[in-house]
Image (cartoon, rainbow, N blue to C red; front, side):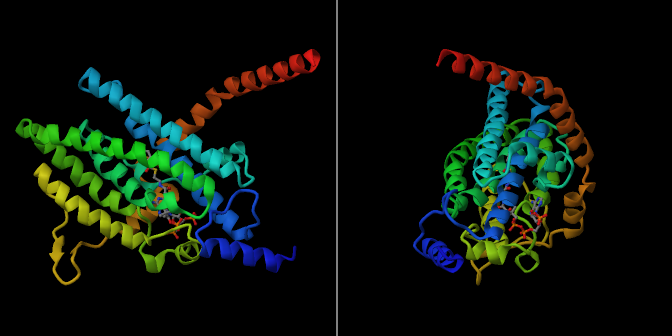
Length: 314
Ligand code: BYC
């Protein structure tokens, strides 16, 4: 079939909301964009285990420990579904991993901030998983089949994560004065980085226009950020916490909250490797990769042995 005809079929599928599947013809840049986005999403899940993982041994009760352990394990699972979805586009897991540990591939800016107190486990669940849900529910309808299907399960789990985070904060906010102060301090540190998770403003987002045309993205960065702010303001009221933004106010005309200007210089620094924890996160990842070398070798040797046994038996 001529390339032009292939493109007509591809565009027709997009128009009719039929998913693009791995063996279908697709423009090279569609494939590239998805490999970039899905692999960066996978890396975010894997790196995202670090700031929460260090609190598993410090959780205040056995119940909190078990819950946090399960949450961090869920994040590992999300990373694996996403790597598997990206592999269907023709990139190997090894290559994606090399892109991560050589600093070629990005991961979410949010995971380059430190987790200083137990309240941060609440705030990450509430805000970071909350932002993830806002961004990922529309991705359940993204045009590439394996990515959309992976997102369905991820979103169900993220919604449990968000609730457990909110509940940690609610408990702290109903506790002692010091506990409530710890929750407020945590919100003060995580609010702005959470808004940055949605990416640059629309007029400064190089990939958005094409990704919207390809129905990879269903809402723009700014649209999702606005929805997130509107929801969080109401949730902060329930907690009795103050969002650290003096410019935050209801806009009757727009029927949305106006909010202050994001520090894009900070965002650019963080995504260029100069955030508070970038170096530490990468070092931990590299060490884990090196220490896992023997496991990968053992798994390969075992698979080879099984193959030979099966050949002999046949
Ligand atoms: N951090 O043109 P734009 C989780 C980059 S995991 C770092 O708007 P796009 C969780 C962007 O990659 C959360 N980089 O790009 C896990 C691009 O750079 P490159 C992760 C960012 O792709 C564990 C450049 O800036 N979620 O929730 O159209 C525990 C220009 O941006 C960021 C996902 O990955 C950022 N925040 O839109 C708890 C969701 N923002 O690649 C929770 C899937 C932008 O050209 N991804 N950049 O070098 C997406 O929806 C989109 O990729 C984005 C960016 C909205 C993030």
